[in-house]
Structures are given as C-alpha cells and as structure tokens.
Figure 1: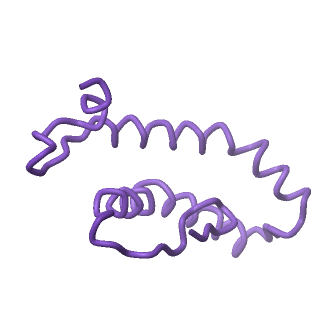
Figure 2: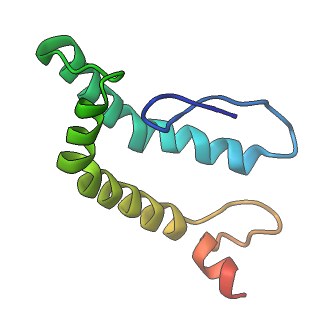
Figure 3: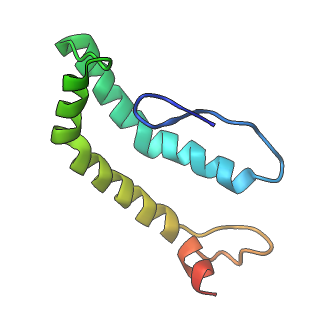
Length: 100
C-alpha cells in the first residue's frame, strides 16, 4: 500500500476476495481523506504551506491533529454502525459482528 503525505491511501491492489476492505478504502477516501486533502491543498496553493518544511508540519500537527483525529474517530463510529449486506452478514453492523 502507498500513502500520501497526509496518510491517505493512494493506490492498492484489487482482489475479488477483498471487496469489503476495498469498499472501506473507497469510503475512507470519499468521507475522510478528500476534505482534509482539499483543505491542505488550499493551504499550499493560497497560503504557501510547504510540506517539506518541518516547521510547517509541526504547525499543522499543532493546529489540526486533534480535529483530524476527531474526524477519523467519527468516521470509524459511522463505519462500524452501518449494516453489512451479504449472505453471511445478516445485515448486521461490523460492531455487532464483533460481539457475535
């Protein structure tokens, strides 16, 4: 797997046996990484953010790491609560499957 500078998955190998995890990565990209990537790209384009400058990275972590982690935790809660379809899933959420 390859990750970009913001820790988002950039490419992965496809398999017919891994459709659920592949779907998870699609949702991570769509519902989590996309908005943060757009935000950081705007900081680069409009305000001179330099991702190779350790001081800029430190400032990003200081200002946004708590918010980024909160968004990540929110995504995890939502993902773990969604129903999973399929013959063996019984339309139960991943959270319920964990306890079954």
